[in-house]
Amino acid sequence: MELGSVSRRLVASHQRVWSLATGETVRVLEGHTAYIDAVALTADGMRAVSASSDNTVRVWNIETGEAVRVLQGHTELAQFREWFLEFEADAWDRQMEQDAKAGKLDALANKALDDHKAGRTTPL
Image (cartoon, rainbow, N blue to C red):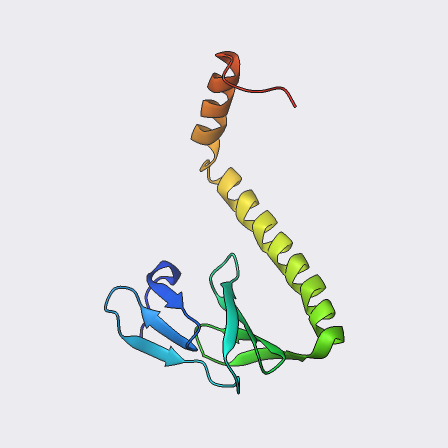
């Protein structure tokens, strides 16, 4: 099944991935045994992270529905936090480099410079 672009998908606390274009469920993320307290997507939209009352955090591959990592207890949650922050920082850096090389930030940078020249900025 073709899912289309990442931007047309949504992950919710019911462990489902929906197509935003059609509203249909395209995948069920199975694994938690209790209520899911929180869900977040990685910056690239390819992974979801869910925290559950079953005391686990699961990292999901959105394309396959597979739990690529399951963390249990406080020690693993601390390790996960470190891993996730590093993963997010690396993904952010890669995206910024790609956008800069492609010229996608030029207009934003020029607007910021124009605002500064016009006195519409605040010294730090």
